[in-house]
Image 1 (cartoon, one colour):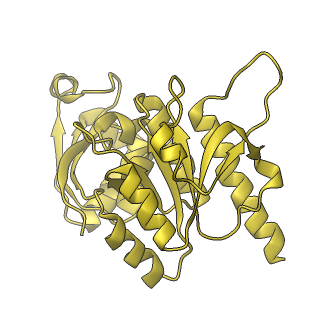
Image 2 (image 1 turned 135 degrees about the horizontal axis):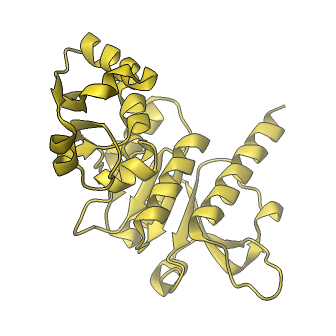
Length: 250
């Protein structure tokens, strides 16, 4: 089972989506004029149905509490439970009759990229993101805000990536590294259980991981530019997999 981590949500959009999904919040703080906003009213209605306290405070109080934003008028406090063991997550995926679909992030450093990737991952149906053990959790106020709540909604696994690749392959899940020396992604059959490994833009995928994958796929580029932003690459590849699955199911 996932373990808990206390975080605050500073985005109305993220707060609303998490409430709709049934997540529990300890309390919600809001400035007085926020109660007149339609989106805020929906938040308060959902909070009322779940008996979540809504505390009306001054703008000064809200401003003192804000960490990653300077303009929000609502803050929600909740316990994140997005920290999974890979074996437990695989059991859950199989029990729900779903097809394993993972992204492995090899030492990505920038919050914006991680948040953008998780937002795309949630939209396309990725059911697990795997990263190296982190000193600071990737599920933070900032990633929640930038990803519109997706960083909390896509299951996150922190573990040694060598062991992760080994476990995935033992479960007949193909693991492909995204690398400029690979086969063009649109020529590769991406259907079925799969994991894409994405490396940091400055150093790429580590040599040890590259030796353990089932193959390499690339996104062809015009001469003069080496690579795309890693979050853009994630979007292209995950939606190509979805396209292939949908096209071949007709």
